[in-house]
Amino acid sequence: MMSLLLLFALPGKIYAAEEFYSHAESPCTLSESWKFGEALEPEFVQSFEVGLKNKLSPVQSFSEAIAYRKMGGSDEARSFAEYWISKSLHRAGLTHIAQFGWTVIAAREVNPRTEGIQRASLECLLVVRDKNPTIEIPQQIFDRLKDYPPSPTRSRTAGVWARQIIASPSSNQNLEEVMKLITPNSEEFQLVSGMSELAKKSYSQATIKLKAFLANKKLPEHLDRFKESASILLSRAYYTTGKYQDAVHELKKISRSSNELAQSLTELAWAHLKAENYTDAVGTGISLQSAGMKRTFSPEGLMVMSMALNELCQYPDAIKAISLYKKQYEKAFKWLEKNHNENLNWYQLALEFLQKKSEIPPNVVTEWIRGPGFITRQEEINLLIKEKEFAAKLQKSGAAELNDMGTQILIHIQKIRPKVISTLETLKADETLPEGLRRELNSLREEINHYERLRKGAGPWKKILANHMKRAPRIQEKLVREINDQMADKTKRMFTILDEITDNLQLIEVEIYSGASQDIVWQNAHPDYKGKAKQIDDQNQSKKTSTDWNWGKVEGGLSGQGEVWEDEVGSFKADVVNNCASKEKYMQIRAQN
Image (cartoon, rainbow, N blue to C red; front, side, top):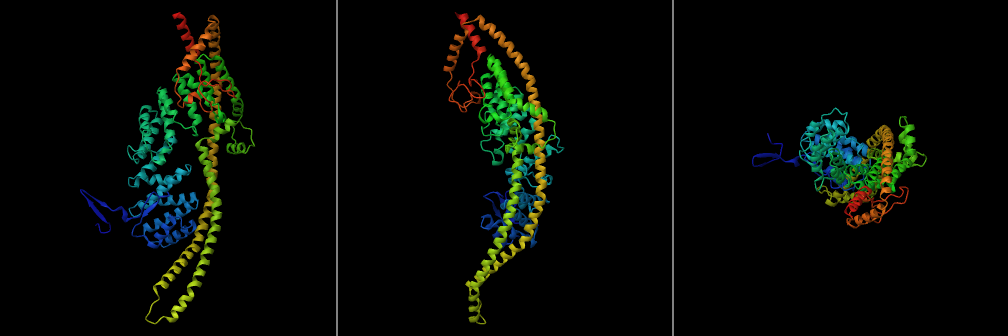
């Protein structure tokens, strides 16, 4: 039976018109628009659309939606009213409450009458998560996801789910089943499968998938923010398989404003070293010790500098890099050695440092707080504080709006009353009220209806806010606990890194002194070497014409290649002479003479 569905035919197939039931385009964005099903009341549809244009306050929109929900009606009407309630709360800045409402709608059993509204709720959950990554999509949504018809929304939600599984190696959820819900060969699928292959240490497959993802000229907005992360992951796949120049190429894509810059520069220094780009390895190491980078935790950069300088036979500077490491990380090492196994309130310590009430080494605290884990959780804590402020303001503004509406109604009554009395006195028995007066009375009736809805909406509004105020401290406690756990892990990792570097540098130091001793003997045997080396260096510099940005050349704040740094970094050249190569060239010149 097809009597209840509007159908139209195309060759070989029959399609149900999607417009029959309500559905949205771009929900929870500035361009949100709807096509409404026949089951929805035109009066309330009109109020919703006025609210979409921001011509109704969030409190008024909420009261209209509550009134519509209380009317009951069809499944479609009830679901739409609930979506509208959450939409009004979201507009009011009460993100957590809106998220809870959309979750209830989207996690219900999916049916054709409400699927469009449920999908809109699902998209709103994704919008909330994009802006607040720590507001997770609840598990009940993921459990319901397979019941949704295939769509970009389902694919995108499955992508979020898959990335969460990959990020939690202990998860017992079936990644392969989740991957089936992602549109095959889509950008979402390329990214997730690349991450998955890398987690499985299948580096060749990870390379293929991540390269395909990064090859997309224009990515959807929600995926565009993963480009730098994908480049870092791809560089790691290259590095592990010995493709060091390819790793360098990817790491140079990381912007200087990225929170991942310190880590990516450390990895870039290692890639240069393994690729035998020793001068660039030194330059990258210097970048990690300059400007704002000096306050980051990046000790490996100095170790790489020392190793690269040793390979260039620049022994005094190689020792200087080790000395600089000891100077910059001595306090951090001692603090971490003392505290890395303690059960401290790391979050409170970080706040005290930011308030300049603590003397914890800065490079320790910056490592705690510069990562996305801390930043996004702190932003959600800030949001909870703002929501409390919004709730108080909205209660006051709601009361003021109710008072203003009541005043306007009284003014309207006073204005229309003489007209009604006058008309009734002259109206004959078989006559009706004039059209203009009837319109005025209908307008007054609508005003009174809206006033009553706003008045009756005050109770549910207060109840919802009160319930959220009870939940908010628990949410904040959870966020602080997660921050503390993450900081504790970072603290242990930082100590382990410094402990290992300290041991390694002792071995590097022995190697440097051994090479330096041999170099002194060699130079004593060739007293004219220094003069010849200067000529060789001048010839090499004259051949260089490239002015492109290169992390290895350390142009940030410098006016050209080969310039000398004179600050806490000491006298390191940004473009270092390869003394080993110069000695080889010197011996070739001597042999020719």
